[in-house]
Image (cartoon, rainbow over all chains, first blue to last red; front, side):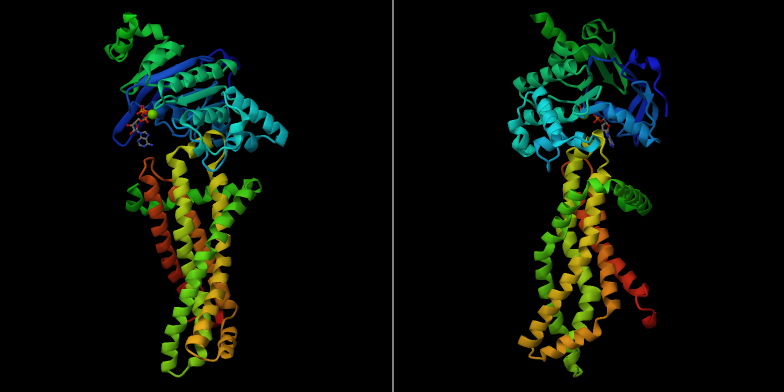
Length: 260
Length: 257
Ligand SMILES: Nc1ncnc2c1ncn2[C@@H]1O[C@H](COP(=O)(O)OP(=O)(O)OP(=O)(O)O)[C@@H](O)[C@H]1O
Ligand SMILES: [Mg+2]
């Protein structure tokens, strides 16, 4: 296991170097490099199938890269060492596209799942925790006895977010949190991500296809195409990029911005 | 997915790793006792209805058919022993295994495959909980332990149904039926039936969990996983039943082979 260096707090929260991953004859990531700055909201964009979800799954350690290293908080991920994976995952939370709430558990038990698993809290402490978590995603305790099937899509994502931040991770990842939601809920979820990030001082990584949303809230953008990162930096920089693919991808947004 | 059919070695390798991880899950079993009881209720207790009906029909048919053969040789008196032995050694474990695989094994595969498809399994790992110890270990243990009990129950109901047919329909002597049954069915038969049930229970729960866990990620995957779990379990039960019957010496003094 690689020890975290003392200065890791100054460096990027996540650093991906030379990542390669393929399935059969399809090479998805071809030497992808990406640094995720600490304490900021980074949006990852790119065409469908370019490997955005796959990138998150490798960062979470669910899928093993063919080549390259992934460093989280200064610690290099080592798939041969379950303890190391476990350590690294403890600092990360993920929100799946559809929430992935446990169907067989009610909202209360979903939210306190990891608390019950890893800490020995009394019933009263659990109650307090659940109430705070639900409150921080804009829900009240009245929902706590509902089953996931009784919630709306937006509520489900809120509960899933509350569950993901229960153990206070320092890094939160969101896989298309707003895809398939109406514009109002989209804005609500987007603001929620921003709020939660600043309130808990999180490093956030968000996959999104919604260029408009991205340009309003992102502090950092990474654009993936053909298995590599083609642009990484602040949103404004996109317009100065000389890469034609980057320009093309964001041309809609550029037009949108120049019209008003 | 196709590779499962093409390469039995990969399949067995994956299955062994899966079973090993589930065995390691026993370390955290003390935290999973409520889930274990819930699964025991689902796999064992809730199978009682279907097992009762199967046992009644199997026991009755068995009494009828055996009577035909025995009567031909004028050995009506052996009806009880034939029914008892056939049920205890063979029919109870096999039918329980197949009925419970169809009911609970399929449901386990469907439930876990759904969790896979909807990323609940990934979410569980992300929250730092190993799905093996949370989902698999309690189910496998519940399946393995409930089948021997269901098997005993099946035998008792089946013998009673046979008794009903023997006395009420075929008008043979009821006292002789029980006497012969009690005399013929010994510890070896019970042991053989129970060990088979134990193994079949293990198969149906492990395969249900395994196919669910390794389900693909699209909507059809749930159906595919369920289907594979049930078919594979049924084949494994029939195949291993032969092996266990033919090669396991339950009674050293009585080995035919
Ligand atoms: N477990 C897997 N097995 C085989 N191929 C996979 C696997 N996971 C991903 N892929 C392939 O990798 C590619 C990238 O998938 P990924 O899910 O990362 O796309 P994405 O960028 O998230 O796209 P979208 O925006 O549509 O969600 C796809 O072509 C997919 O078929
Ligand atoms: Mg995706």
